[in-house]
Length: 65
Image (cartoon, rainbow, N blue to C red):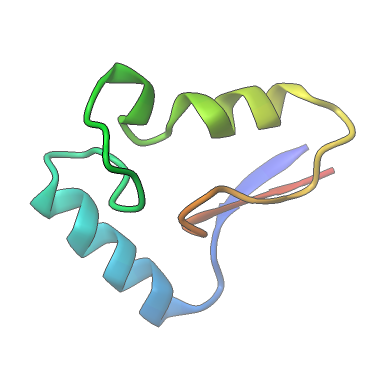
């Protein structure tokens, strides 16, 4: 298993700008709490699933099997 940044540098730049604007919280969500702090709870749970392969919600990270 490996987690990597999205290969599209423009997406990475936009998401990182959003993270900075929201003090490290996912720019794709409305709620700001510990569960939405990057790397968000949703993606941490997806990473724990050995069968999951894909992007996090905001497409910053990609989990490979």
